[in-house]
Image (tube, rainbow, N blue to C red; front, side, top):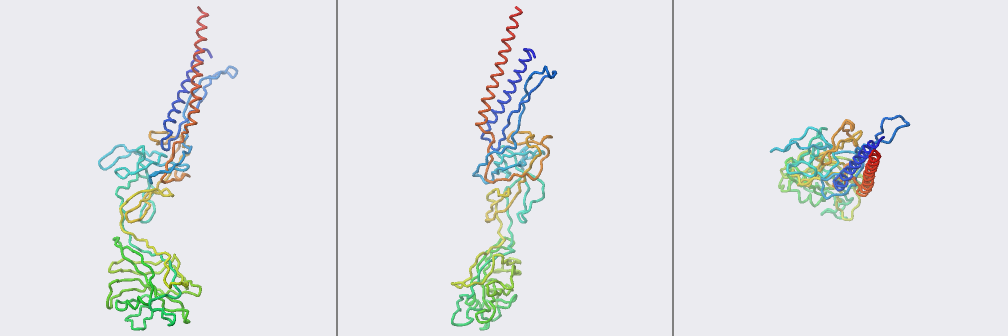
Length: 457
């Protein structure tokens, strides 16, 4: 290699170090950019084609080396819709090609990003700080299942949750072995029991058909105890209070079997022969251990109508447990009483669940899954092409997007840049020294060429 070859080699070194300096500069500039993935420099030596014994070290070529698989630090954020990916995976996003009066039109190609600072824009779309629109799969609020598998830009503008009628009441309670009713007296055997033989118009203890009419309400209240109240909803979202009341009809204290009847109030203003309380239609019997015998898991209440409001067919679930143990107060201890209906509600706020689902909090107090955000992965993620705003484009070397990324979404958090300033400053010093050394080679080659010219003179 002659002097001019030396100059060419040194120039390639200058170009390579300048390329590295550009990458270092970009990494430092983006050290605070959300989910930024730094670009390192990869140097490749160029060897002249010579016999093995005459080969010389040649020039150098600089290329980029992606760090897409290097995780940035995850920090908590104050915005509920912010998302960070912990581990492998990418959000699927789209960019708006144009804005129209009815909303944006989107580019056909999907892009991929780890930038998760998504917030609702004025049109209800989830958009990150770079202007990319988050894609996901809407979820049916009634079933909790995704609507298909196709991804589309997520929009939650004026989301409305329709009313759902109550169909299930979950109940758990302990009934006292001796109910302290108004008429109960320890000196009078069976005085704690419901006694329909003292002039009742109808027999309320008959399972399934037993009712308490308005004229017998006072006596019924004196011979039964409160079982709790739950607010239920009809199909329009109108609320109705379902009041429960327990009456013991037989007891082991006088040689019988501990048996209870459960009633719910049908008409709070009942008078005369109109029905006030309805027997639910099941004998609840308990053994000496205080357990239901036979065991019951659910009880059908049939078609329930409260004060003229048709609630619908209700089922009472005893998954909360129903027992009969001694109680000092002689009252029912309600451990749980819940129902699955709710009125209509307007979307108030969004958040991200631990499962990576976008959940909505509504004005009716319900929190419902609204969308699923699947993560995509690639066979070679470092071969993705970087675009403005932290987005990536598929290349032939990266392979197509694949479902089932191993990472998970962390709601209310953001991934920081993976560019470490201390590391970049170290590379900056090394690059500066290498650049200066290449300029020294050019200076030396120039001096040698001047000596050669002086010999000719």
